[in-house]
Image 1: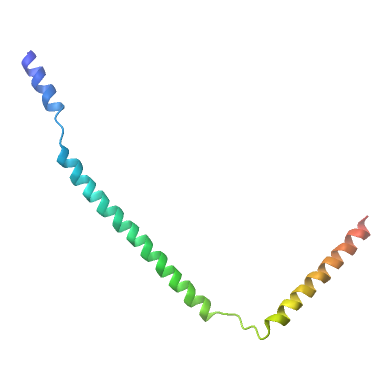
Image 2: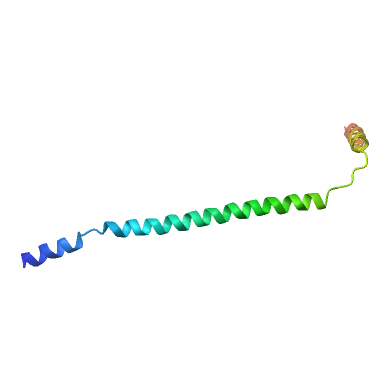
Length: 89
C-alpha cells in the first residue's frame, strides 16, 4: 500500500517544463500581434484625421480681423454682464 502512495505522489509532482515554454511562445506571439494591430490602427486614425482636417479647413479671409472681432465681442459681453451685476445690487 505504501508503494502505491509513493508512486502516486511522484506522478502528481512531476513537472512539465517544456509545456510552459510552448505556452509562453504562443502568448508572446499573440501579444505582439495585438500590439501591432493597435499601432497600425492608431497610424490609420492619425492619417484619416489629417486628411479630414485638410478637407474641411475653415476659410479665414483675414485672421487678424476675425481675432479683433472676437476680442471686441468679449469686451462687449463683459461690459454688459458688469452692468447687469451692478443693477442687481
